[in-house]
Length: 276
Image (cartoon, rainbow, N blue to C red; front, side, top):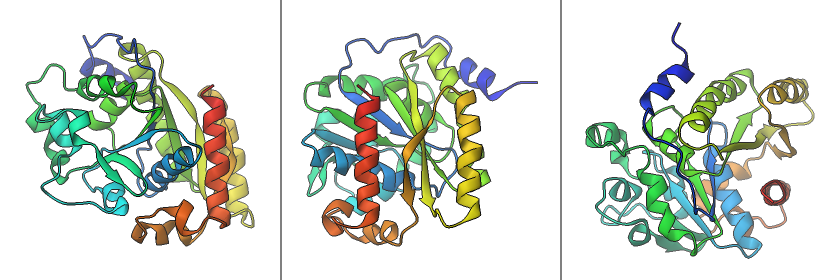
């Protein structure tokens, strides 16, 4: 039986290990299941790091462009991450500035990336190589990845030091983590030995429900089997997570004293500590 690990290993054959000289901490926010709070986590982690004085770049690697839309810029004439991946622009040229920080926008045409780069031998390493010139410009790069296994997710993992897996308090969301683990191991073995799972983040958490408590216990068991742990911080279920989709100033400025904001501040501190 051919496993996901085998398939990915075959796809990445010949890439080789080459992340030397990368000092900027690049973190992919990833789960193969959608709707788990991935984009919100990417936005809030970027904001939390910026609040602490770090230089942060966010990258929207999704064709849905949710991160880009929330930040407030979906203008078609702007350069996007697609232009970077196709070699039409450098990463530095594609950077846009906003009230919540620097970012590279997503593109609807990312859905065509496999066709566009079908003959490119370096298609999985283009993102990694494009980010190298930014090492001295940013302390952190946060990548919002698509909710699916494909060349974009592989490219993000190859370019990253670490991956954070948001998991909603339901079983299907947890399955997304276990599926992703095979992908991560294949990337480690073939292209990026320094990649590590920084942790699993429980989102939409409601401590009053049995489901949230049971999912915590379940994830504590399975994360150990994959050599990682849950973050101590639990991101509470809150309508504020949806409200900020319409607030380009971001959660930290929109609701600075809200409990959800404090959750993400605590989570950000955990991330910083785990990367030391």
